[in-house]
Every structure is written in structure tokens, then in C-alpha cells.
Length: 163
Image 1 (cartoon, rainbow, N blue to C red):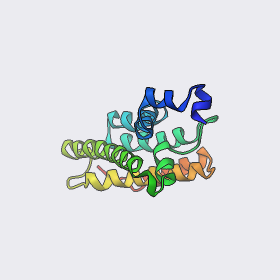
Image 2 (image 1 turned 90 degrees about the horizontal axis):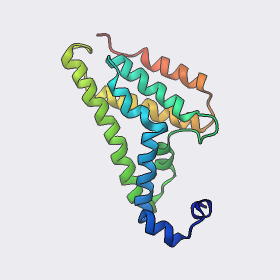
Image 3 (image 1 turned 30 degrees about the vertical axis):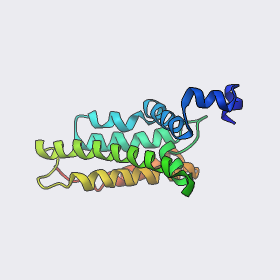
Image 4 (image 1 turned 45 degrees about the vertical axis):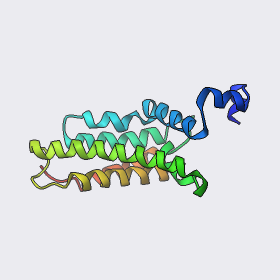
């Protein structure tokens, strides 16, 4: 389908992009600069709570854009790739780990600066948000409306640690 849409042969596609895994990595990188940019941009919000809100609302927005596939490319691909796709699973695992690490680092800074309570577990907070975001993506893929998903974001933030 891809070669037909591009009007090129398989040989030309591989000559231009390398193997399937390299092509998928390029697609994921482009997604990260487009609809998935919220993940990298959210960590620049001024407070930890605003980082969390930006990250989760970005998930809702990216996953429910009219005229685009629903959900998150990384989550959908991780659910679709089987045993034969170990290389792609590795790419996706690293990609998700990077997002979680960026959040963890930002929340650790927030804890160090007093924006989160002393003793806040930056790793747990980052894991909590990425888990909620992954669930939002799955729900978007299943057809949940932006309004319904925003209610999930609002509920998740009710559990935000007081500063």
C-alpha cells in the first residue's frame, strides 16, 4: 500500500529508507515532530501540574484529531506488532521510555525546586501519567470522544500531589 501510494517500487522504497525498521523509526520521528510533539513540549510548562495537564491534554488532542487515525501511533503500533516484530517493539519500548524519562526528570526538578512535595516519587508520577496517557490512546482508538477523554484527564489530575 505504501509503495503504491508513493508511486515507487519496493526496491526504490528500501533504497530510500533502508529496511522496514528504519522506515518505521523515521515515521515515528516524524510523528514525534507532528501530532506527538506534545510529549516533548509538555515538560517545558512552568509547573509540574501544568506539565501533567499539558501532557494528558496533548494525548487527547493528538488522539482525536478529525481526519487522522485515532489514538497514539506508538501505542497502536505496540498493540499491533506481534512476535515477528521484535525490532519494532524495541524501537517503541525505547521511544516510550524516553518520554517517561523526560517526565521523570522534569518532576524530579519540580520536587527539588519545591513545586512538588518533599519526597514526591518522580518516577511513580511519570509512570502514572504515561499509563493514563496510554489508556486515553486506547480509548480514543475505540472511539471515545474528546469530551469523554477530557473527563478522564480531569479525574487523573484530581490525584495530583499537593505542593
